Image 1: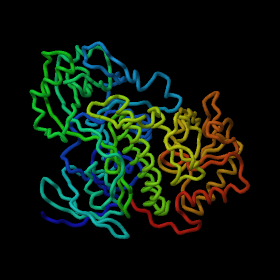
Image 2: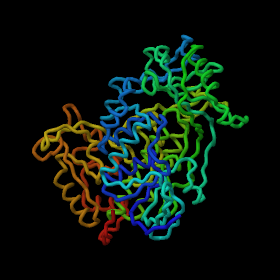
Image 3: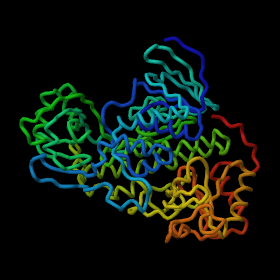
Image 4: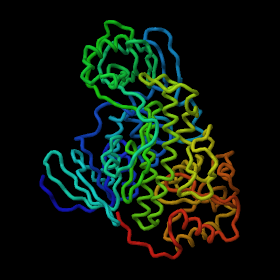
Length: 556
């Protein structure tokens, strides 16, 4: 192994799957220089991780790739249901979910919609756009070691093709290196939760006749429950390429080698209820479902994200979505600290916010596996876990502590319904607004990405604009102010019949402070006696900035 000179970079991302690539995209959008290393030679080849929920698609919308992802998933654009049957020809179908995106239902909550796009189709989109934004993405490159001090992390990465090693000096390291995370192991971070839930072998296969057996049942996944054919069937193109998750019992001595082509073919024929079904096995891959959450998300200058921080049942596709949302939460905070706009204490809010969400979401995912009788899962007897709807879990989770001011600590992390009305710690409400200067309509969510935003009405515009300018001058924290309403002072006009202030829980003279990730950081219902002093105090607390403190030189 030949060692080469040190590379200097603000952020080193370890792991180039969905979460690491998403983090690269988000950092690139924020202008943060970074390097990503991934031990595999390329993106995923096996179709998996296909469900991208509404919140994730909102994030990708803001990051400029929503339409490209929709296009990448076009072959499954008409698949919306979750089906259960004893076999595909048994005639006992039960739609567990008829449509994950009911027509007109979630539209009042979001400008985006659920998108079925498999990981192998989604990851290339992320790679392309991350590289366009300057991301240094290195596949066939593995983290060999790392150590940290008060000023950063020193890592050794090796090119697995040439054997060349480089030392990388980074301000921060983010481990998105999967459920068996070597980084987490080295840090000695444990995890808690029920542990292993079940094991499956994921089989990719080709069958030209299966499409006629499936017919017009356009499911995202079909749970087959019949003996000898139980598993989960997922279409890849609705024509001849399919994936089947078959139960696997390693605890009873089964190995991956036991899943021969002959055994898989017989199993699939029972599942289809078609004894002569044509089956060509293309690949097989083991996977393990578990419910675990890391005890800590941070160790000094090293952070965990995605599966390295939490594992959860695949039912509901919560795992990958939670990981992408981890990356989104962390990206703006790293950017703010590296630019000198926030103190290092802001980074403590990452664990405070994301770990409780992972705990609540993983419990919901396990409960959903029980509700859907996921093959191989044998839940413990009892009433089961929470039955909160998918939309509330995906969209309405809350941060009760962290970089928020005035959040109600007594509210549940995930509410029963997806009501969003501007409470601090919740995702800001979606409303359609017209921008006269650009002659186009935008969602409120389109306003949030690169810096903090203050929304106010015409009645409070002059005072809050002056307050934001003064607070920025004292703290070095940029704040974009938008005036919402009617008249020449407004730069955003709400859709007819919409009361933007009421939807955000304020009056037209009040103000709502929204973070770059679209979460409400703070609000005040009406006018303040000294708005500049109040806003300065709130921003200083949220961003770990002392008024008048010198701003360090920006990096990245």
